[in-house]
Length: 113
Length: 117
Image: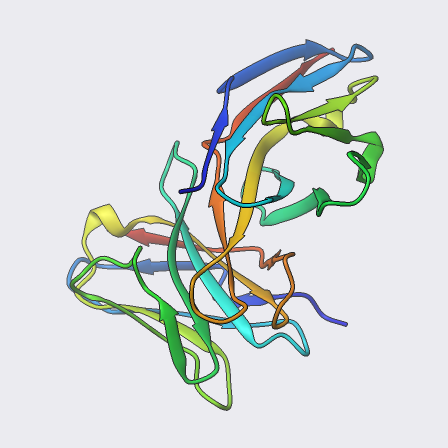
């Protein structure tokens, strides 16, 4: 059973470009979470999704950031018009419905130059 | 409201000596508590979890943690540190969000463990 798969693992974007990060949850998991880890800081919650629904996006910046988890395919975290401050590690996690253990992917490292 | 405080941002121990990483939590409900480890440029790996069963929880790689409700603590320990234990450790509390059965995590700020030869 494969774990949570994130890609790309490393992404470099110029300021103003778009970044798309993908996350495939573990098999049988219907909940996906996105976290951001800025350099020298801990993990910060961004958004929590179920299939086709955003449940909690209280940690998402109000502009340029969006997330989706379609009925088919991976969850996508999209960052438009990236700025240097978006450089961070973005972690996806998944869990089955009702479970209290969340499993993390290896992370995607975004560098904005 | 839920919160997690990791009392030490950096801990340094010698190889072969005990490890103690401290964590205190605040939760309005009976919490589930976790410790995750993150090696450099790697994802988060679950070390152990407490979910209202035994208060002394054993995890992987010789780590264990004890849930003490009276002290609202969930400290992580290991009898003898190994060089490969050098990493960042996160204490995490899990709680249900208001809608449905979903759960949310609140992370501590992390403790960087250094193991000296």
